Length: 311
Image (cartoon, rainbow, N blue to C red; front, side, top):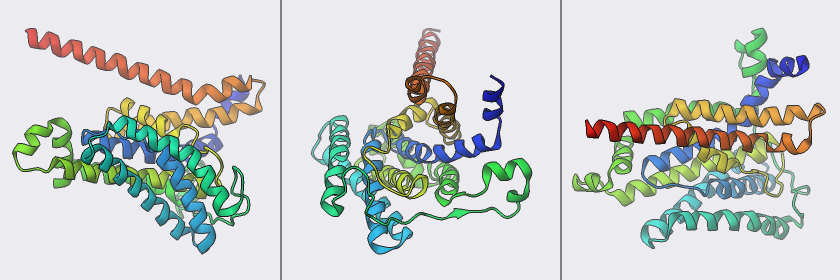
């Protein structure tokens, strides 16, 4: 037990938490933006997976990690645009359309990888590029903080900065006001001249862009290759993190860190004599617990509002 506590309260574990939180945080921010606009994007998993493959292929054939990152973000935006077109123009059920994207991404990435490189499941023959790590000059010299916060992949710092940028977008800009207005009451927003469809299009495209960042990190930051279903449910965990964070930037950051800590803990526990099945299910168990907490909180809030209405 003492070894476990030493592990949890070590700088190595803190570093690992930030490392594995990065793709979850990107996806959670994307999910939050779309939900704020009144459209739930559950295609984050498939979008991240497609972006991960795109980043590897483009960076491998161009020799540029930046080109791979840009391509990953663009493919994420494209999938967000496709989802918006089917849901908003063709009036397809957005949940079913997103599920279709997830299913096509799961099998389509394997097929595309084989067609492009001849690899089966893992991009072993593609010389993909890694996005750089950044050493923070002053913090790097501080004993504990340096070990936790310095020498991360550049996208880890981008994800943390994105929390601030999304807050500014949603609460300090006219576009953010429109997004929140459409999500709160689309009919009222439309009555004052706001184009609901346009706002939801923008929100889904931005959501896809964040998923693209998360996918690029998975294959060009977390590891240096693409492998079958490498996102491992992080797109769905992001939806739970958004719900647990109550749709607020600080809340989704803390919720993402919670799920990231569970993921990091499951990796660290592999060195102890703990059944592998329990270790592997830990992140998903935390996800279920988080959703239960969210459901109870929503139920209590609903009951409280009903009592206030009666009074």
